[in-house]
Structures are given as C-alpha cells and as structure tokens.
Amino acid sequence: MTDPDASEPRLVSGRWRRVTDSECARRYPAELTIGPGTRYLGARGPGQGMPVWDAGTARMPDATTLLMSTSSDELVSYPVEVAAGRFTVTDPGGCAVTYERRG
Image 1 (tube, rainbow, N blue to C red):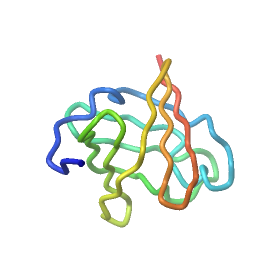
Image 2 (cartoon, one colour):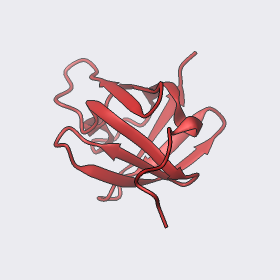
Image 3 (cartoon, rainbow, N blue to C red):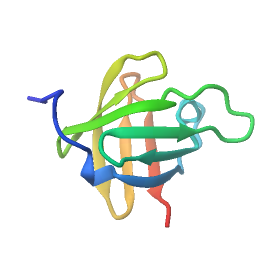
C-alpha cells in the first residue's frame, strides 16, 4: 500500500535526461531535476510541447512507486524501477519512459 504523504524521493533525486524517444515518451520532459526535497522541474526539448511533468511535487511512498503531480495538477502514481544510474516509469497508458542520470 502506498502512502501519499511519503518523504522525498531519494532514489531518484538529482538531474536526469530522458533516453526513451518513443512517441508516447516525448510527452515527458527531455530533462528532469528532482529535489531538493519533494519538488521537481521538467525542461522541454527542442520543438517539444507542454510536458506531462512541468513543475510540481515528486514522492516515493516505497521503492517501487513514484507519485508525481502533473501539468494538469493531477497526482499520478507510476510504477518505477531504479537501477544503474537510470530509472524507468510506466504511465497509466502503458508507456515506459527511461531517464538517465546526468553528471
């Protein structure tokens, strides 16, 4: 069971760039900064429209769930896998998006 009041998402804190380039993945920001704390900021890539994640809150109630507020102010729960400098989320529509840690 997930806890929406969980603390900061330490496993995914830092600067990230999206490495998945599928059509559905392009809805997510090209670059993502998570933290400090529970805040995040997404950055668009060239020619990219408004990303699903623009700025908001990120939380991890457990090691396999990432809760993100979206550009429509909805709070969405994503299954997440974190390994070897990367994390992958799968959105409610089944789109898998992978981010790679930046420096």
